[in-house]
Amino acid sequence: MNKKVKIGIIHYGCGNIYNVAKSLYKIGLKDVTIVKNGSLKHFDVLILPGVGSFKNAMLHIKKNDYIEQITDHIKSGKKLLGICLGMQLLMQSSEELQETKGLSILKGKVLNLKNFIKNKPLPHVGLNSISLDNKKFSQLYFDHSYVAILKNVNNNFNIGHTLYDGHKFLSYLKMDNITAVQFHPELSGKKGLKFLYDFFIN
Image (tube, rainbow, N blue to C red):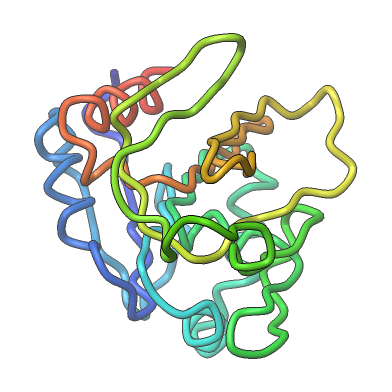
């Protein structure tokens, strides 16, 4: 793992920012910057973290002219990691609060879990598993009421799902240099740290 990699965590008013930074420090990464309004151009890896509002996050991203910078970062082949809200922001739109346009980096939309969950409480909070490549990764921490629904999934995608109240929802995706997860690696203990370590060495 290249410990000198420059990492930018985009701060758009969401939670768990500092927990993400601390987790990166724990796996040996030191060049970590939390960015509120500065340029994103000189980072090797960008992280879209968060617990928060889709609409407010997009307002901050637009205000700081980040849409083009994030898109250019991805087009250049550099890595991007979306966590929870950060995964959802990659989609075309969200129905949270009101219909809001997303980054449109991936074709898909964000819907409320209440459309699918009938017998268990929402938000979906606590430890759960991901099924990926015929394997199951357990003890990962979730905290969310909305889920991303992908359109036009093809062979370029590597995707994983999580089961809650009998409903299978998207919880992991990787496409080229984009990785996004619905769970919180920064709150998932050793399993989360291993996920982050693997992300940075692969």
